[in-house]
Image 1 (cartoon, rainbow, N blue to C red):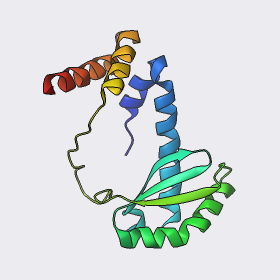
Image 2 (spheres, one colour):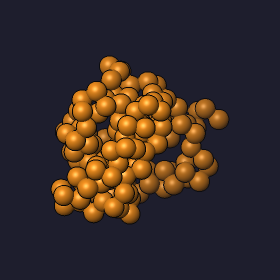
Image 3 (tube, helix red, strand yellow):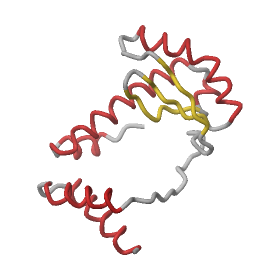
Image 4 (cartoon, rainbow, N blue to C red):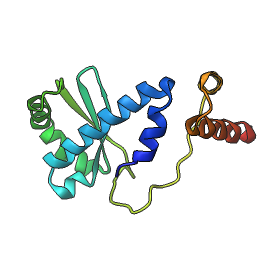
Length: 146
């Protein structure tokens, strides 16, 4: 699923460029993963990170993780053939990571005090934009929970 309007909003904010680049990188890897895996297994797997030549894939169930672990060397080779600098693929079991559901489950995340402070600094450094407004709303919501 593409969010072109969100991409434009993020692209307009220079301080968010690293986040946008990482999201695009993960989206490209996810597309390659979907094309490599059989459809029933692809629905139970998603790319969650890529760093230092390692692609991390989350599996919705232990059974899917086992299948993915068997395919990991072939998958790393496939990514390498796509001219990506991938030397390993690791698999993590993450229940409810399946994309088969119509609606994403509502999740809450704990943000540490240093993380909130970093977000506040980022918010103050941004110029007026929809991304700044969204970040302000997130900070306001987090502060009201305390």
